[in-house]
Length: 220
Image (cartoon, rainbow, N blue to C red; front, side):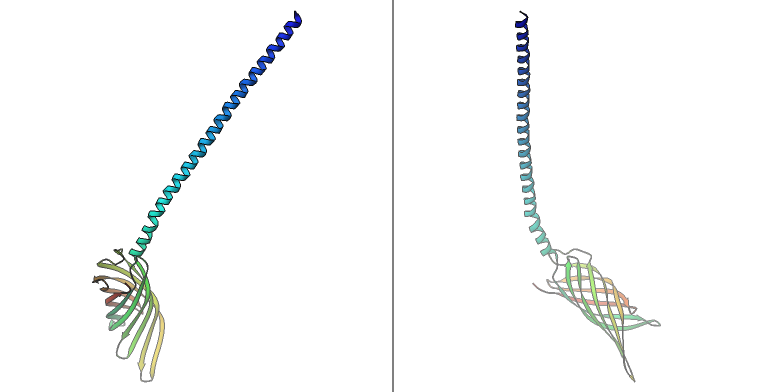
């Protein structure tokens, strides 16, 4: 009887162990399956997210790139040649009045910023001045469809060389020194390609100048 009881106990313990192993195996199988399903769901979610992001960026690129090109093409005005006639007053024991003629070119780097050279000749009885500068002009108002607005105020600053030629009985004397101008004005459009305007500047050699302007927009 004692032997049979011992055998029965062993069989019961074995059954409990097997049943426990089965439960653990079943739990591990469930967890593994859940892990595979979760990983698959995450992969699918990431794939969908990447697809959506790609679609969004693609749509943005399709809209932004043409719009950017259109804005650049429309907003940057054409180059301009400009001619000036005016008055210059030099400070020399009062105001010494002289006349000027000049020409300038402007190329737009940005819709409202242009650069270019300017040459001004100032004449008098026994002397003359030649002023050559590189100018930067800032239009205060943005262009409309690649053209300056009908009324366009602006600021300008430039630097370069101021040459003076004076005639004496003994000969001609020439001197050169640095030069700058700074000021502003306003232009008005007359038709599609012509502008007129006025600008006022101070500069060195110390002077005040007031000029009438006629501009011609180049290109088509």
